[in-house]
Length: 162
Image (cartoon, rainbow, N blue to C red; front, side, top):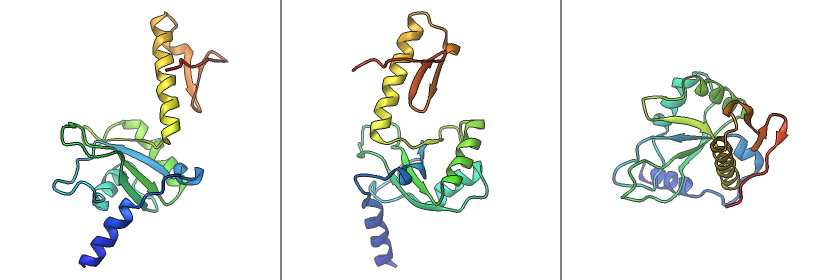
């Protein structure tokens, strides 16, 4: 039993540095799940994650892998996000479609699509540019974000550089 838990801990920490497009497309991000007290590097109980996902979509094929994003910091008030790899892209689409209908589970837990680090940086630039345009007086409803690009009407907007 102890060997099995050691193997599970090792598997959870062995996350490849680069993910293929297929891997990322099967991933979701869950924010707000509390950290396991005592040992912060172990994987979450799969039942806890399954409980959140079943609350959203009852029938899905299961979880391949899960891990916390980032390093643990005792001073941080919010728990780190959890990257969850599901068995199929179809499950991801079903869960994200339903998750957007109610936005939150158990008050502070949110389920979103997973973005690679590069995509997260791009999204940050998009949101910053959008905010700047709104401050200049452009109406919110004319600005749209599609496939990591910002549009004002039908024209693509150049992003603000950091």
